[in-house]
Amino acid sequence: TPTSLAPGGAARVTVAGTFDLHGVSREMELPVELALAADGTLTVRAQFNVLLTDHQIDRPKVLMLKLADEQKVRVSLTARPTTEPAR
View (cartoon, rainbow, N blue to C red):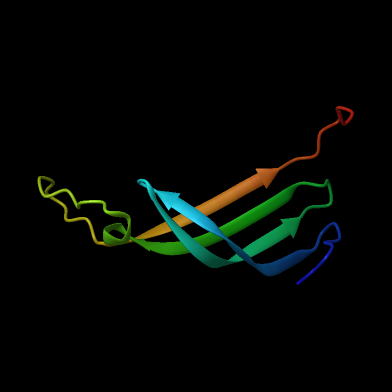
């Protein structure tokens, strides 16, 4: 587990937390990719699968296409440094 990330560096870490969907909470541990650009921009990426039935979500039956119970969730966050002073 890295405690710091140098500009231009990348790391893979495991993040633990609670995933809430449709009123159902699940504890999860996910692999996450971190990248810190030379300009200080931090990118965080993760992907994981969710079963709709685990979150009490009924699959639509009216659609021409069938929705699988297992759905892939992709998360991509970007944080850029601010030039404003900290408050």
